[in-house]
Amino acid sequence: MKFPGSLHSKLPKVGTTIFSVMSGLARETGAVNLSQGFPDFNIPERLVELTHSYMKRGFNQYSPMQGVIALREKLAEKVEELYTAKYNPETEITVTAGATQAIYTAISAFVNEGDEVIIFEPAYDCYVPAIEVHGGKPCFVQMNLAGDLIDWEKVKRLVNQRTRMIIINTPHNPSGRVMSAGDMLKLQKLTDGTDIIILSDEVYEHIIFDGMEHQSVARYPKLAERSIIVSSFGKTYHNTGWKMGHVMAPEELMKEFRKVHQFNVFSVNTPAQHALAEFLDDRDHYLELGAFYQQKRDTFNRLLQGSNFKIRPSEGTYFQLLDYSSISDEKDTDYAIRLTKEVGVASIPVSVFYNQKNADKFLRFCFAKEDETLEKAAEKLVKL
Ligand code: PMP
Ligand code: GLN
Image 1 (cartoon, rainbow, N blue to C red):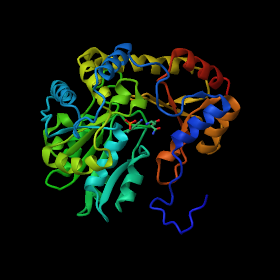
Image 2: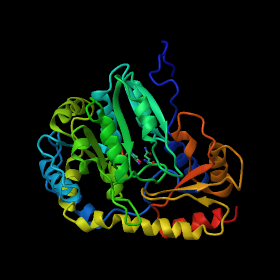
Image 3: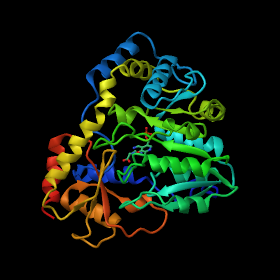
Image 4: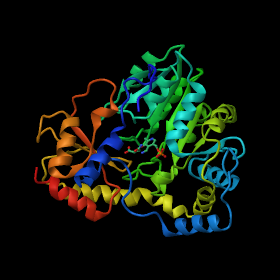
């Protein structure tokens, strides 16, 4: 069928996301799929049982728009315990359909036509389209993946009257780098006395390695009062397909967030919220998640020893960047496709996370996989 009129795309440059493209290609070719970020192992059995039991007990209708209160209360306790921050579960926490919806809703609620939003590149792919669809203007700062991550002087030069929002993401997808306490203090100083809202994408908050501590904006009261924190249960509980997340923000910001949230999703999966509320009592699950994934990172890196890929430091997330410059000088998008089709390992080319041209020869590999999957992939990669 063909639309009979003329279309005026709101996102003329946007195609299908790289995650759909690479996972699709991996399926088609039977390649080991280390591209899209998701675990290939199952979620904890008790979480399945809890969800099942809530479904059987009839918790199957709309939840309150803000989310099930039992879950919001557990989240408030958790953030207080981890980061000594107080969020009122009634007015300052909302359960969302994953982090993507949370990010889209936050941008929709606060970014107006002509507003500028500062973004650090490489940047996770859902920020820019959400800004542009609302008539906002993304302003990019390149990160230094090999050293001090962010040049705050550069950021300062970009800030002006039109700057409405700064989006940060730590631990960072796709680089696996993390922001330091020093970064947070500089951000605090930079935004002090302004109307800037910080959108803090902390979906990998528990996946951080080598004894480092996650620098949540919630730890910094002067930052927290202007921040919307975005979290995803998908990363923490290995259930990316549930599309469950939550946001925390001061009441005034949350009021505006909810005005949009109630019309773009209203509320999210009820039995899953009840099950997660109960499962949150298992503190060990999230406190040990860093060690769990650190072991996977180390296994993958050990298996790659002696290969021609250069391993970049991964300080958090479940991603590993590999530099393939001593194997090929192809563009990363071409090389990722060839690697999938001819070698049988799917990855994500990092240049797709840049707005500007980027000549780095990095591919991103997801190590949230069974050891056998990592072994299968590494066996192919070490031959190159
Ligand atoms: N932000 C980042 C940095 C992510 O990596 C992801 C997903 N991998 C999301 C947001 C979206 O999370 P969700 O699947 O909960 O929508
Ligand atoms: N965030 C996941 C990644 O970085 C993918 C999420 C998605 O497919 N939208 O791979």
